[in-house]
Length: 408
Image (cartoon, rainbow, N blue to C red; front, side, top):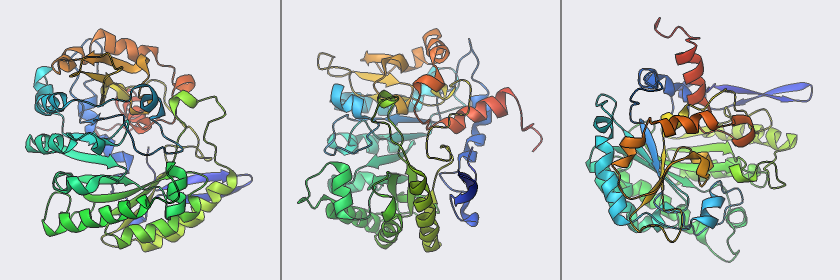
């Protein structure tokens, strides 16, 4: 679960990393918000209809123009370098509002979509149209982008509730190094300019993205890696200057297909200490319209895996719609995976190369869905779990009723 402070053990000493300033505890990165869905998740019962998720992820493409050092979608980028077709995206946009009724639980609609990847979502030329249609259908959208292609999609992006731009650096040299770009490229400047333009555009036009709201807006996303921790404060200053609503730091995690190899991401004690120093300084920049979040509660004291739950129930709470599995697949098909941390892992695919979006409802909560749940070995197979808090809520609040949550 999310805590305001995360205790970090280092030898015999103990230091505290403050994830956010105290008065900012009700924020988008506080996992206690998951308790709002206890009633919905309480319907997750074997042999019964299961509600549509509150949120799903849609990956318009596995193609990317960057090559980030920590890419958690490296497997699908190498083995499934494809896009969702325009037809598939628009069919999804029209089906998703009907999902809850299709499974016989209309009181629990799908309410939000995170557009991500796989790859860079805006490299699919139909992503803007998908955003327009989904939001017109009453579903909120957030998108994660590397920022390089945003300029031509300003109108659509401004309809989102939030836009997260994965900058992950405070200087051009570090940016190029971590993104696998040539040193002579000025892509960093392009990304920063695109963020500033979108922030200004959304405010002037009073769009969803530009609303005067404590959490809506643009997030300067920053995955921590041993080579960029020293720029945390510098990046925070830049994010505030260009009009971001927040800057969001969290440690990079080892991808699922690289666990147990020499490519695992390892943070040293001095890396953790440096982050503690940098984030403390950065949080002094906090103001009424700018937030600094250093999110570490899903990790252990050394920024490693900390999957503190017994079974995975998050695969009944969310899903990932992805491009086809191979070049011989039908053009207008999709893959439905059950975990954003294990993109490309066939073991967690509920539908593979499916052409009919209606099949989503037919397979959701099915015996094959539960079979996937039963087969997962969390400690051996799973990387750092994005949905660790979901699983803890289900086990501790719903199954065990450890909080006696009816006694408010």
